[in-house]
Amino acid sequence: MIRLAVVLIGLSVLFSVMGFKDGNVFVGVVFALLALSPLLYLAYFSATRGNEPRKPAGKQRTLVLRLVAVGLVAVLGYGVYWVFAAPKSSDQALERASDLEAGCYGSGGRKYFPDTAGYTGSGPHPIVMFDHGEADDVNQMHPDTGVADYWSGDDLDPHDVQLIACLDAPDDGQYLTDCDFNGDSLKLYQGEYDFTVYEAKTGKEVGSGEIAGSTNPDCPFSALVPDNGDRIHTDPDFADYQSALGRYVN
Image 1 (tube, helix red, strand yellow):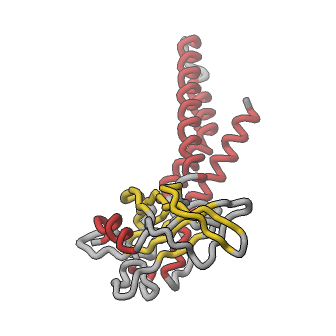
Image 2 (cartoon, helix red, strand yellow):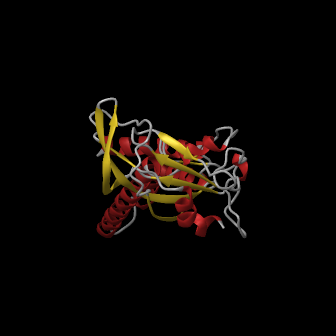
């Protein structure tokens, strides 16, 4: 029991430090209090130790222990979620829109960017879009010629960005054709993409949906695929991005 308490206290201290370092005061305070809970219980135990009758006092202490145990499990469960799943604040200096890539993907989990604009007011709401490529690479999606820069344009100031759209790796749509690359053949499928839109400033989910790739059976000039990969997928036309994401941007 003592070893378990030491482990729980150590994790609470770690999560508290991470919370304060990330700028999340609520998480930092909660885990700081959790780390102090054994001391608080000892204070309670000392204060009630001499109470009479002893039997009810013992029952009270048992009830308190159970409540503390339930609280520890609940709070540590939240801590695991926060550490491994919740987005973290980024302190990266933003120079170009592509610097917001970590708002979608990253080895340390998703990031949010406090120095970007909030998703408020009337449109347009500048957006930057990223997709998870065939070879597990990440690419910024760029607009067609003549489309406004707030649609993920190269000249879009990253501090003005309000939304980040993240496309998952494609699923197989309809089979279109076989593509030959110097003797290597890859099957071409229409890509089907799930997307999620996040607020850049907070990392909160704004919406989600699906985008279908082109049904044009033209093979690309070149393709990157993972080892032993046997297929590639068509990308959506930029008009399809605008159709699916326009409700958030305009």
